[in-house]
Image (tube, rainbow, N blue to C red; front, side, top):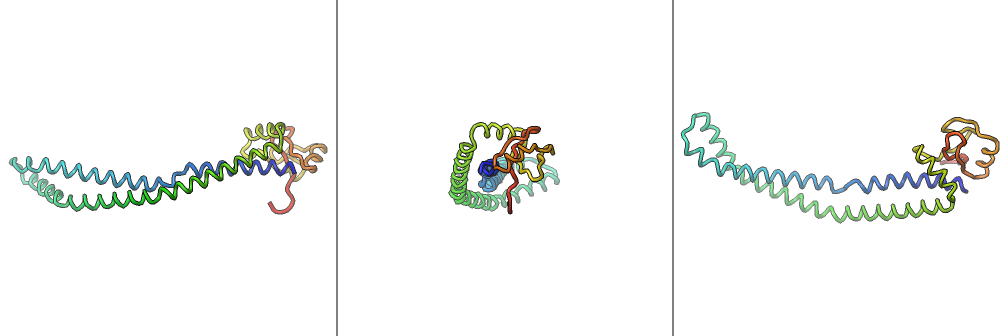
Length: 197
């Protein structure tokens, strides 16, 4: 019936929004973050090694205080540990790059499946719109601009949105299965579905 088309269209548009949000979420962002962090760690270690390689000979040739000698000794110890730290950082980067490469096909599959569902959803929305007709779609689109859920089910002879009493004619049209805009608030009204929803 026609009122079912209004509800179906509303459900499809909610699903469309959810599918688009899923498609926008980047499943690779965690891998990308890990890869970026590994690059930054490696770069930082390389810069520190280059800096210490350049400065240590200069510091050793100067006459320095005991406190400065302790700092030079610490720098020398750090420089000795840096090759191992660099090796570990390079391994971490290689692992992150491999994980990134392995995750890309799966993410591509996920996005293709979502795109297929989005296309199917759009086609179903188009079919619903065709069956509803241009006047019904005009009312629906107006209600959609004003309400988060543009279609509501009438259960007690009142508009659930504005609480206004519906005329006998409006209630009869709803019982016959025709959705219609509320004469007061313009939300689309449909008869309540019987049975479980």
